[in-house]
Length: 362
View (cartoon, helix red, strand yellow):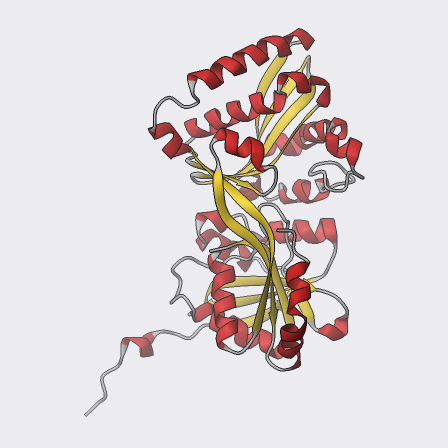
């Protein structure tokens, strides 16, 4: 008598392969990932290599011939360490794509951890948010196989629920609109204000340069060496310009720009994914600080976003003061993770883990 075939016997086991560079299959995985992770496309990682250096390899997990996870890596530290990290940009987070609902929760991660063990002693992931499905799946699979996992706090994130704020009544409140009109009236004494919204194509064709002009006048240029500016040539401008070369990524980019007599005075730059907006950066020319140009612009930006179907804004980390005033509340912690393989690396991690935790910023 033939033995009945169990449903689990019909599932094709996933296979992880290490491929040179950044294969086109990364885009297929990103397109099947949750909307929040769909920006993790091939060009996102290629832009990071272009801006920050490194040579990438990619662990591609396939099931039944279909790619379901893609983990790009670059060397991290001395070669003898056999350590790697996930490339990318800090904003909004540095993660990797996994197809949504492609397999049981742990299946692609089991294959990844098994493959990683043969090549690496350590893997750094992050910074990523608590609850990130890709990171959490890989971390859980690694722990189950004896890896030591270390975390360091980076920062608290802040989230704005536009849908909930709008449901309570008029939003923005009349008092907010009244204050904004007062400031806009006085702002106009400096010249003719123009409020513009730029898509990815407009950003790639001069828009990023306009944002950089604001940063070059802002506090970040006056008080720092400017390396943390998002769009200048000496900051992270190379990354965003390279990322915008992918039309699919460019379609996710959105900026609000205020000009005074045609000169850039303030901006807000975001990455939109479905009903979610990642607020990446905003800045203003301090010459107009008395009239709150940044606040005026982000309110206009939020109202315009709601009209396009945006329901939530992820404000990321830092400067919680103005975010709370808008109505944002604390969201998930942002953490940096270090996975150490069983054996000597794991033992070293147990002994020196406190150093990694203390190196965080949270």
